[in-house]
Amino acid sequence: MSIIQTDKEPWKAPDNVGHVIPCDYEHKKPLKFDNGQAIQEFNIRYETYGKLNKDHSNAILICHALSGDHHCAGYHEGETKPGWWDNMIGPGKPIDTSRFYVICPNCLGGCQGTTGPSSINPQTGKPYNQDFPRVTIGDMVRAQKILLDHLGITHIHAAVGGSMGGMQVMQWMIDYTEMVGRVLILASTARQSTQSIAFNEVGRSAIHQDPNWNKGDYDPDKGPDTGLAIARMMAHITYLSNRGLESKFGRDRKQKTQNLTDVEFEVESYLRHQGQTFVNRFDANTYLLFTKALDTFDLYGQKDDLRHAFQNVTARILAIGFISDWLFPPEENREIIQSLLKLGKNASYAELESELGHDSFLLETKEYFDLVRAFLD
View 1: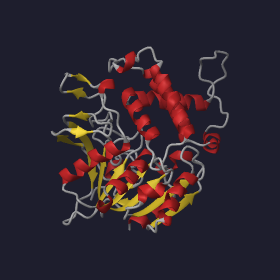
View 2: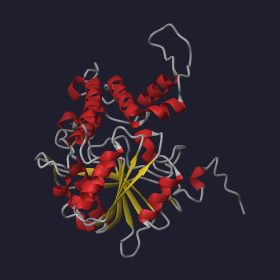
View 3: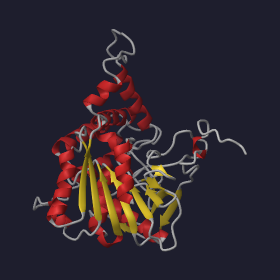
View 4: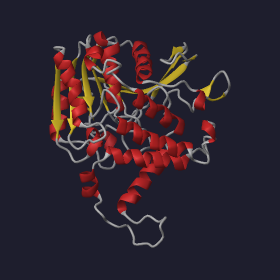
C-alpha cells in the first residue's frame, strides 16, 4: 500500500475534494435585469463537490463575496493554491461533501467565467464594458436560480454566504422562500452603511482617475491597474481589524529608507502585494459593478423596517457576527435576526470573538466551525 504525501499533494488528503474542473452553463434565453435592461444570453460558471442524492434534497448553495468566485474548494490541475473556502468544504469538514452536494456559482457580472463586463457582447463582437447592465443582488440570485433549475434542484438544504454572499442568501430566502430550508448568513448586513458606501466610492474614484480608465473601454491588457490595485488596498484594510494588523505586522520595518515612494513598513508591502495579485485576476468594470450592487442593497426599504421584507420567510436562519468586524459589525447581523424573531421566524444569532475583522468568516476557529456543522446538521 502506498502512502499519500499530503504535504506535497494536498489534494489527496482524505478531507479534500481533490482536483476539480469548473463547469459552464450557457443559457440561450434573455435575462432581464432589475433596471429593465436585458442581455440575450449568458454563461454561468460554477463548481460542484459531492454527489446529489436520489431525491435531490442534499444541495447546499455557496454564494461568494465581492472578490470571490466559483472556486471555493479543492484544487485546479497544476495549481497549488486551493479554493477560497477549502478549510470549510470537504469530506468531514463543516460543509461535509460526503453528505452534501455543494454548488458554488460565479456571480452574474463577474470576471471569472460568468458573463460580465469583460465578456463579448454577441450583438457587437466587442466586450460589454460599461454597456453591461447595472447588476443588483436580486439579479445575481435570479441567474443562480436559472442554474439550479438546469441542474434539476428544486430544494436547497441550505444557502450559505458571507459578506456580499450573505446578502445573496437573504435575497434567496425572500425571493424563493419555499425552496430554501436553511440560510446561514455570515458577517453580512441587510443594508450597506454610509461608511461602507464611502469606502467603496474611494475605490471607484481611484479606478476612474487612472490614466488607462478610458471611460471603461480600456484594453484588457492595459486597463486601470493602478486604480484597481489602490481600490483593493483600501477595501482590504476594511476587511481586517486594528488588533489583527497589530498582531500580524506591528510596526515592523522591511527596510529603512529616505525615499518616500519606497516600501518601508511590512504592512505596506503586504497591501501592495494584495493590490497587485488582485489586478492579475479581477476586472475593474466588475469591481465597479459589484461595489454598486453592495451599496444599493437595502432590505429595509422605504418603510425602514426589515419585517416587511421578511414576512413570508419560512427557512431556518442562523446569522453569525464577529466582534472585530467593523465593516459589517455585529449589531447589523443581530438586527437581521431580531427582526425575524419579531415575526415568529425560526432564527438564531451567534456572536464570536475574533481579532481578524470582517475576514473572520473565511478563517478557521473551532467554535465557528462547530456552529456551522451543527446548524447544517
